[in-house]
Image 1 (cartoon, rainbow over the protein chains, first blue to last red):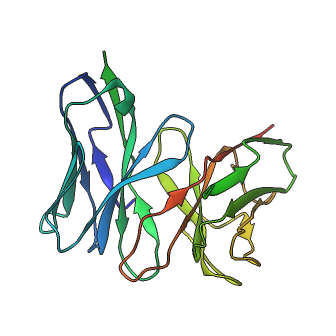
Image 2 (cartoon, chains in turn cyan, red):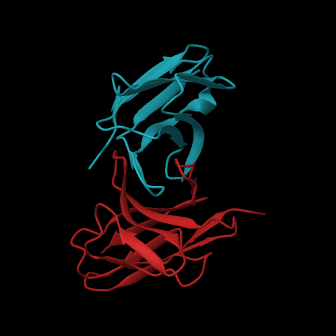
Length: 111
Length: 114
């Protein structure tokens, strides 16, 4: 079952603009992670935010977490063509290290 | 050069054949995972292993089998019982940390059933 649902499914922006992707999840989490996937490749971890954190930054990335609304957002500032990829949220919900992935947002950054 | 490798990159099989996908990591991670990804979809967990000689079913284990005889290796067998095996298969590993940790992914194997 999919824990996370991402919104929008696809996003097309111009280089230099900001991109915002949202993720909603269903149950309590230990942490929420964001990954990036270039077409036909493996996933790359971007950022992890724990359930007791509200905001986290890494370079041009900003992640927020609202546990009361069971939602998270990923903001990419000053986007570049190289940011074109699919972005997935993944919820860590219990014992062990299992993650449950969302359906992903396809981001296209045009020159 | 540390990382996680999968082989082969592309795999073709005839209906009714079993096929084994390789996954190796030299990151000294305790936990390893197999996911399936269908076009335009997220990842679904097939099997995972938190320690050598132990593994658990994920959400879609039917038609698949795994083994974990060595810490660095977690091969996945797609059996003839898997009704729709054509997909992109991703292996991952992580440190087994209370509260969860990031996963490191291999480059994937694209399996096509002819």
